[in-house]
Image (cartoon, rainbow, N blue to C red; front, side, top):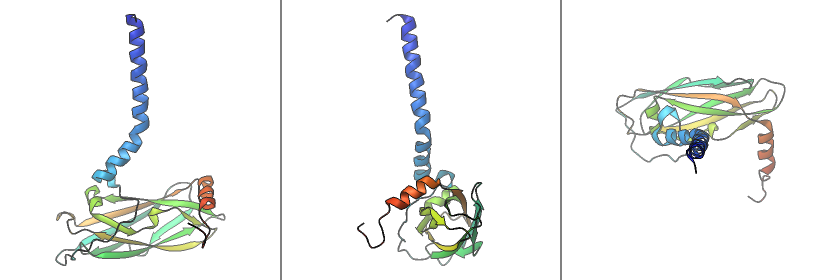
Length: 188
């Protein structure tokens, strides 16, 4: 191989490597955020409650913020904007979804936690954010969030903020998932 061909070959290899890295960057970032708790990412699966003694000597304020992303005419509201909890104490809060449009739509609430280091100490036992929601025209539903802050939450964290942002879900994808789901009482 002459020097020009070798340079072209190496340049093409570098270009392919850069493309592969750029393609893998988003999934790698998501994994990194879930492992480290950076950027407020939390588990998207239910966790079990930890059987630990409740720390009665300490209070933590948990705030809830809800917002709707563009393209979804829903309202997401929470019955209590903030609660005070003891670390280790299981807590349930109800959220209300309302579809203000004249058509059925699917949406998903995407959570984030602030400060981000608190996300490692937040255990969600039951959350509407684990699944997509489908609401008929004008429908209103109430869904719970059951969570627990672990006792090893850093002492200097006195306030934890959970933000839920609603995003539309691709209707074709939602319909395919609904068709693939087993009928109630059918084989699972």
